[in-house]
Length: 385
Image (cartoon, rainbow, N blue to C red; front, side, top):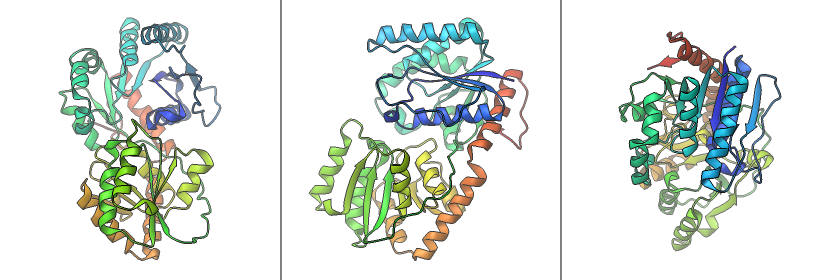
């Protein structure tokens, strides 16, 4: 049984999709038959994500936290080094890049001669690299460059992310395994009284294209529909979006509901007729998969790897920007409700077949076995490029 340590800086509920993706990924590998520890350095004063099951195969460990950056790194080093001495790990898996904690993990991996894998989680996409590009260029020339050159394997969620990794002249094998999605029974929606709902559920951040959505909506506005925006505000971008909405006199068409979790999140999906993610860059786009799992047709952009929407006729996959979003909105809002329902049902079937966490865990375990034994995995299980 492979003994693995997965590392992510944060699993706070407010931290966004990276913490949740790392947690569910690690759990799925444990269910597939590995011994897995997920180490995080979250601030214990915040509300943290919790494991979805209890098993002797899976542990969630929290390193000591300090608000002082140097003390925080030292505390993380001590926690990580102690775990390595206690548990004799076969491999590390680093979920994410750029954070200084990954440099600490690299240092400990070298010290204990432990191979490690890296999942960039979209951070090597062109848009992401250009955002705060000076800091990232420095990181690539220093600590992140060392991590990249010493990693045994990289994990990508789609061909688009494989290409972004290769553009950085990274030559190691890349296992292409998508993220998974929780597929529960469909909740009952509330009776439709009034306008139909277009749901956006993600971080409120410039990369998500909300300003394009506002511009698009101003040109295709439909009195029978409204837009619900759910998700945490980052760097006060919500105020910028709301100002754009007010400037165009669209305030009555938009509702901001903040970050939603648990039953509130399920209620958002249950009451949505259409899901939209007008993003510029995603390595996967877990919110798209979640919407499909809830049988909702989706509009997203080619900035995300969701060509499946087009191929399986369960949504619209268009160019980023106002024009592409406006065109898709117009088509969707003029599509018969029975056809929208059929599109949603096709999307749910697709997620159940390709993106269940059980399948992801089995595929990932096959890639890890290949990684530590230096042997090719079965090509029908996982694609290593």
